[in-house]
Length: 464
Image 1: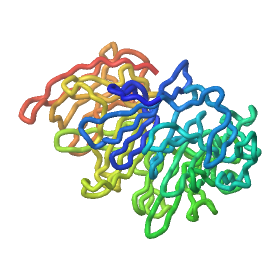
Image 2 (image 1 turned 180 degrees about the vertical axis):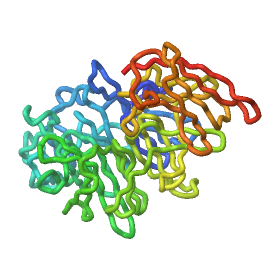
Image 3 (image 1 turned 135 degrees about the vertical axis):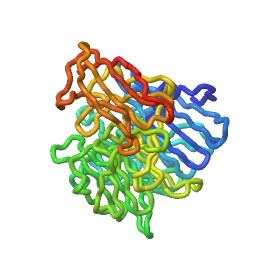
């Protein structure tokens, strides 16, 4: 169902994926029901650059109970209907030509013709055991009750123990020209579009095709110096021999290589600009200019004449290289558990940090209560941040006292020599983690350049 949405539900739900092409912006929203992931809809706007964006909302694509035959090209294929939005979250999407392609855990691969916007088409992917699926070849169909139906094929995203296929669980998609790449829980699929909407597929998986792992979380295309490289986040799924790493192909999938230098870590996202490859991971943002030598960019720190901030987390979940014309040069966006950051270049050494709306006038600690074991994990420590209000503060004296008003920790922050956040890792002056309890925090700073330092008090609860 398609509706005009005056107040999009994604304002209240999570955004699971998004894609942009010119004025078109599409995104998928998600939530949870009794702890189970729930797809809550697809939103599309065709005027994404205007001041008044109009959204068209589609319910999360599902099937009716009797939908056991689906169209592909000039024929049909047998399929198990996906009738619920539970476990049916759209984790990735891409636009190419007239099609919006989406991939969902239970819902598999589907597409929407953007010139019609009338129905979501289910697209068959190879079975786990198949290397190819050529839906454009009339010889793979049989005549059943007057209709051409794919022989020996049944699309089912349930687990193999239940008769299904991991290769029908979608996680990532990349589309361009007549080509679409789909990452699943059983490898990577390269599809070539034919007439009448049919697709011919090649299926690549571990260990036969030298992928590091079969769970493919992200796929990106690099075009540089007349060469095309397909990059993929390939982590372990089921087999003991699978490893977390990044895999790539220089010949459209005929051969695959593994980035050995990155093997063993959890990766999330890839973005490419020219010769630069950027990979988001649990340990931070990795960068390479040749695909062989890799550098771990330090966590983002913002330093301006009037403020200072930093990302207090090693993990980077998402990354995007941005080469839009109104920027003087390409730059980097990253998404982290501690906020959004933009580097003004591809070096990752000059950042601006964006956070959710907060009261800049207040002086407070956050998170509060604070757990050094779970909050803001950076370099093997957890951190609590202190907001000093909307003042041009350049130097802060931090003193922390326990409930008996004994000094626990003291530090001077000087942004002119050491930019970053006013923060504490929950350790005392000896380096030991403090006990659970209430702590009194004294922040001493000048509220203007020509005023003396004043005391500001904050109460902080530490709960390990």
